[in-house]
Length: 245
Ligand code: SF4
Image 1 (cartoon, rainbow, N blue to C red):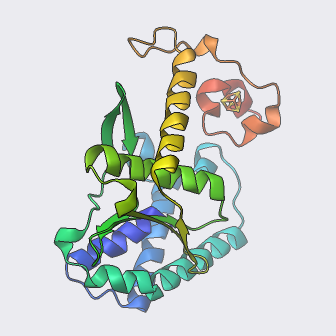
Image 2: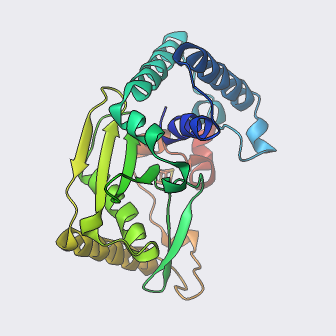
Image 3: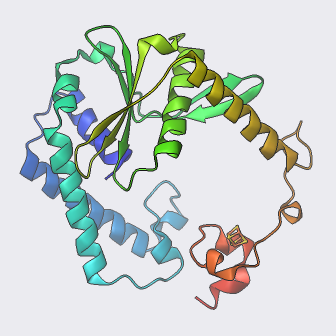
């Protein structure tokens, strides 16, 4: 479970459903099974928005124990999510104060389009904008803080919310830990500088930066084939390895 499942629960709450724990978990597991079958049957080839698992695309054998462990993990995350005091606060918040729009947001940053997809956001009782990142795996503080910083940059650029009116929260759904990430004017400048650097670095690889055109031959491929083994892009980048998997 990640942002997607959390969004599903929040959407149900927004539509007025109670979301009782056990039926909801059964429903989540059944959807996981449907996604698994759909991916196994290769439906994503005709319908790219449907579930597509690496293991099916690359014919990786998945042991039943791995599926059981995943199911238990998702169940645990859903239970934790439904018990969160933060969820109780969100339930009390009028829908008009929710920020979530179930889709990505794009904004122009110094001439370049940047896409962000905050997991969730709302205006709390103190009229502060709270931006939330749901995590289901191990925490990586620096990347989480950058990700949340990009959400807050979006809030700054699009919603015109200054840093001192924004709370950034990382919520770990494995154990329910809620970590507030520090956010102020200086941090906003650090995030802007990182985004600038990232844009420059990506444009440097383009054959024609103005037209946003890349040429595959300009990108060096790793010689470490063990990295390619688990790479999503293997089918297009190293199709010769597919026959060896
Ligand atoms: S398959 Fe993936 S890891 Fe290997 S060279 Fe291509 S992009 Fe890099």
